[in-house]
Length: 411
Image (cartoon, rainbow, N blue to C red; front, side):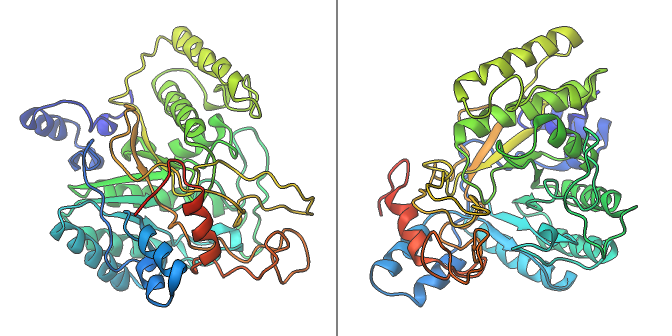
């Protein structure tokens, strides 16, 4: 039976909730409903966006000030355990004083991003678990949302997928025999560390609808401890549309529900790739129907209150993904694509029982990295300029995101 730690959104009274906690005694159940509909997300008055504004002028400064007026995540991406504790404590204390909920990104896994654009991270499992423990101590009993390791399940070193395929990420300095199992052990440790806190919601990497299939990511989420977490996150630092994430996330939640509550296997789960056609959104109802049939076959019942919930990064998906009109050796459609727009504003009022919040996890206006698109460079051939390094402010992109926002954004 699926652990009821995912059922934080049910309408239990305080006494019943306490009784459930004592009976089940699972770590995650100590947490309150942090992202309740109407909860106010924290707008950081010292954010990296507002820091960027201080060095800008004219329209570029106005753009940064506008973007900095909305809640966005704070990324904690290294340092010692004590430094992580200190940095996190400052954030949650400031948010608590403002009576708002901060969104924190834990981003420090070994072999992070498989040594690509966002390379870095801890150098061992022991170093990582100590860092996570420091991070958790920084939160303490304050409200917080933790986005646990973007790409942490999408890119796993030396991993064999649920369909028996070897992943492309094969760093020679990683132990091929243990790298994948170490990744899952670290994420399980992190889930338990955050789930043990009384007012923290933690979400694991669910990739996005143009990446892993439903069965593959559901299998990875189960191995990473999603049943003890609040759920998973989608579309971080990407551009896939919200309507596709709603479908994709619902299917993942259903796939997990079927797999942990019956004889069903994740690799049997329908996805955006079959029977749906990923290029034709009108066909995605075929996959909806496949889940209806799976529920009928297994006898499992849908229960949004107890199933895995999810959050969606809408920071840059207002007009959807980029389709290049020029042919490049590697178009890198995720990397500083031109003419994108802000998506839905951050909110916990989603109108969907499974979606806890729309968040700006990737800070809009910050660069994805120096995009060469398979060319020798050093300029981005699509933009005709040298893109800022990953995480640095990108005035041109900030301007595009505001101009093309859906819905439109005004000061």
